[in-house]
Image 1 (tube, rainbow, N blue to C red):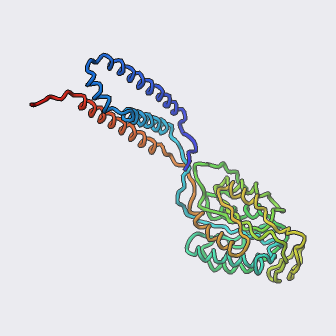
Image 2 (image 1 turned 90 degrees about the vertical axis):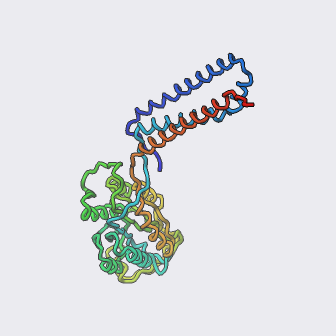
Image 3 (image 1 turned 60 degrees about the vertical axis):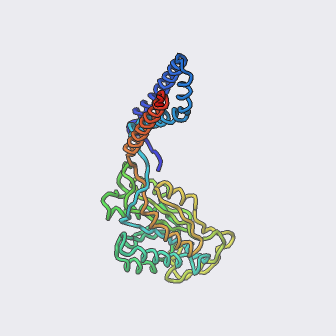
Length: 358
């Protein structure tokens, strides 16, 4: 939790009372010292001083000052960003199907491992949020609109085919429009939206899995801005290794780079051009309130997907925490007054002359 802003910042002027309180306390102590000089009974002075240790005088004053400060801050109506539990109504899986997904650095190849991990994730969410599928290469398309039908999602995954280009931004925008179709609180991408930061996040998220850099369509920062304006969090997964690798896709997986199909086998060679733009993916996640994950093999990909449900269910919202400051301030003032009265009572009792009954 951290403070975000104050609704009534002018109320913080009440903190100026604190110097006046300390000045009054200092003047009172100074007058007491002068009065003590006029007392003729040295024994009486010693009995009072012996019982009145410095910390007994200073603790109530410090507590009182802290209490007044807390009350002043509470009067300014502080707003805090706090984590709260939430639930996802819709999860859009946007999967990269560019030609680099034929790379075999992730066995048997990237696209097959991604299908298996996505299928396991979909099964784990059965009976929970609606899930939709989007694939993107040079363009993006909705494979399955958000649905609770697990079987229709699992049936669509083996039908993924690769193509040329990587349109990450288009994948995000297409996912947003798919969410807007089922959630009236999320505006479609053509609409102008004024972000209400106090409204928190939408109960819909997008998961982008990609192994490349955007080279088609809308720039990812532009798409991320659209998602952020709607309160839709985007979680990104950078997929694949940084090592040169061979390419191998079956005839059913390879959709062609230039309009032709058939199986593909070859070698990336000369350094790997199929490396995800991790910096861009981190920025997308940061801008929208999501998280970035790195997955270099099938196990890491499955692990990243397994972590997502827990991340979805915690969102940050603005809360008015003025009552907490008010309660704290009142408690500190009450304790300060109680301690002061009690210790003064003890000192007065100690200063009272003892009568001998012999």
